[in-house]
Length: 150
Image 1 (cartoon, one colour):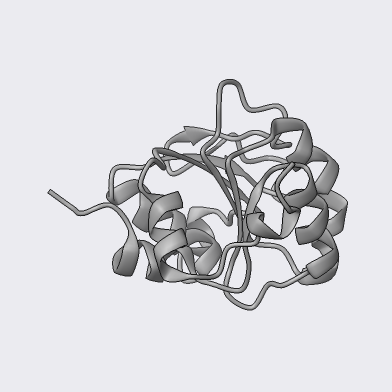
Image 2 (tube, rainbow, N blue to C red):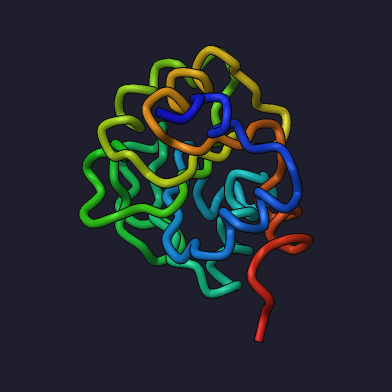
């Protein structure tokens, strides 16, 4: 079996390779339209505008049923079908509480947004065979390294 550390992705060429097939992104900790000035809303909106299917998984806002026109799910594991990437907007200390949910769904990639790093959670995900990117903005990297826009 390959070394789990190979699932910790940091090099540009590896990020480019893992972004290429991404078409469906779940956003854990997404904000609502009422918080449109926050990264946890405008980053997913950017992805949607770029043609990515965004699946909202807010942590708060129990009354909200849709975000960005898509139905809300309360856990990653509850999302039907496959998820290519989970974009995480949670404080570093809150990430471990989501590891079991993430492993249950087993997306190809878990992406911890800029400013979010939790090496223990990343190791647990990597050992489960999930590629992990930490402390990078998905919007910035998508613009820089992601699929070419038509």
